[in-house]
Image (tube, rainbow, N blue to C red; front, side, top):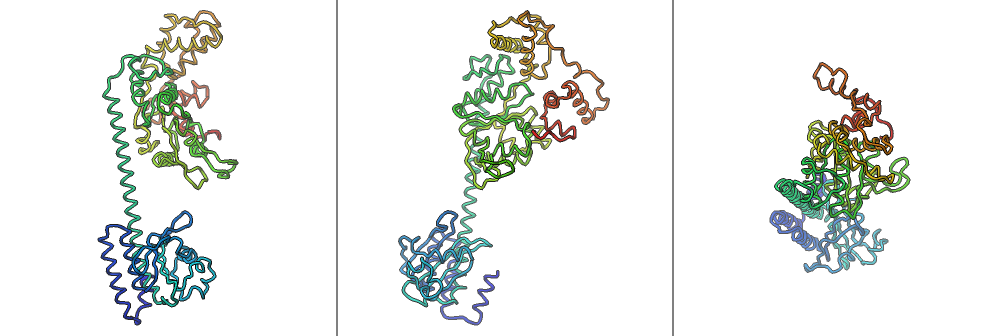
Length: 531
């Protein structure tokens, strides 16, 4: 409004014969804005009309650009409506800088004789008459409408400035309109690409679900040697891993602590096309919130105290490979939003940095929680969940695969014997039965630790069930609260877990199936400084 108010004030009571054609030209441009086939067509007409009506020798429409030299000549026209060759060399950078930096119009009756004559670009171009006006929308300067005459001084007058402002505003409308159209087009293309990605994900999952579940490992395309067992529950999980190993689809691994989620992630990486790249794993619950962002995204030197050098971060370190995010449901919600943006944009900005870096990484995430419950409780962003859980694989607890307990025990005992150069021991029927009778709340990890302990206690002698560590009776004894209120039951479970773990909060969190930071939160105490 101030621009048009100034325009009208300066013309009031001073109408001239040449004003009528200019007003008609503005009206004509308005009509062409609605019917033009392209931005270039409208801008060309605008420059041609400005050159004709203002009596210029040449006209240029220049747009501001972030890269050097800071501008681009979109349209360059001569008095005979022909393009101007080598247009970028025919405009004065001094005049353009004034338009872009000061945002005001410029008039010179004789550029060789006034202050502009000291500018090298004006002298080199031998400019006489100059008339320019920035193309503004709000506080932004989008470009500049620039008219000149090299052979005649006094070709323009100061009274031409408000009229040129009217032309420049038309150009600004065109540029801004096409900016919005380009943004809409880019958003539509991104949405279409996202829809294609979703369709591919749905098709991949449909293929997995439609294929028959294998009855043995021989029907799998990949061996997954690190995931031992033949039980139907495990084979179902291996079946899904087998189907998606050759893709780049994100995978979310769920299951209790000790079920082998990191082993599954490594097996998935080793079986896929990124196996030549690096496998990088991070337990997001084990790193303090203030450090995890820097760990994932990297940081620039001086970003914070102690940042004495640039660090690329794990998302860039895993380029061409796989990033394993363990206990992802324990991540801070603000950091979840930043992670989601990085994954969708496929680029990352280090903490304290001023530029973004492209990332090329497959994401495999894991949680010992039910991720849908974590979403319902507000612990996991729903949009991040859908981004990570394109394929979900549940690793069953050991109690759901009793037929695998004895073979796993034999494998762990053989490994312990091999370290000492001893032959693998036999697993007797009584010991196997004793192992199968236990619930194994720590799952495969607990069984492995128990077998290492058993081998050490046997000292080369027979492996007897009497050497097994006693079950954890404390976990199931003690008077449970009479109230069924969840808060009371939760408090009782935490107390039982701390008792069994002899005060070790990490072990208590593992027994409860929650992250260590979550346990500290429920106890109302801050976690240690190391996370």
